[in-house]
Length: 260
Ligand SMILES: [Zn+2]
Image (cartoon, rainbow, N blue to C red; front, top):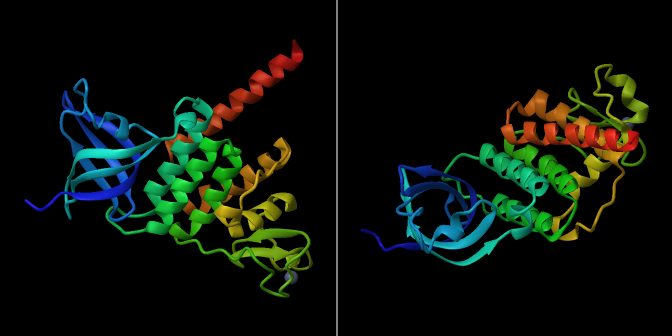
């Protein structure tokens, strides 16, 4: 047996395996995504259980296998994202972010940038930054991992970087208002939505201040991102459907409150 390794990681999901054991998928900083077998995780007084809860980051000790299941034996410096864990809205957005991370890269691929970005976004949501906006920033920036390297910066025809923009599949990114006529099939996103998508594509996570958007602007951004994800990314995540349903119910509840 090789010496056990020590590594940092973020729980992507976990599920029961037989009666007492668990399978936990962890995005490790050093080895990429790995599926771990945790023996006796469901036993009472299991030391490891707190570190394999959803929305938890930790230092783990275990055996990393090239193929097949790896093994977790211990953990330390467990950092649970408590505010996400106890809030159904925040956990819905965090689950979607973790699912996107999981879908965007193969298992076992070393990707410390994506690891750091995912961890940072969860930390921001946990600290109280707007979960919808953090999710939008994450969505725009993860498009590259799905092979979609859009130009968000300036018009490819005249280099304009200010004013109103739309999004064009033909031009692989934004198009300034003067050149909208060049693409009849441009996406017709709301210019305000494109403005924020451009901003989100460039924003450095360490520079994210509390951005404040109206519900209307959020909706316009949501519609633009849904269009891009439905048509060009093409993944169907249950967690995204859950967010959509949750948003619908919020509207229904608000409407009925207003009527009373
Ligand atoms: Zn132009």
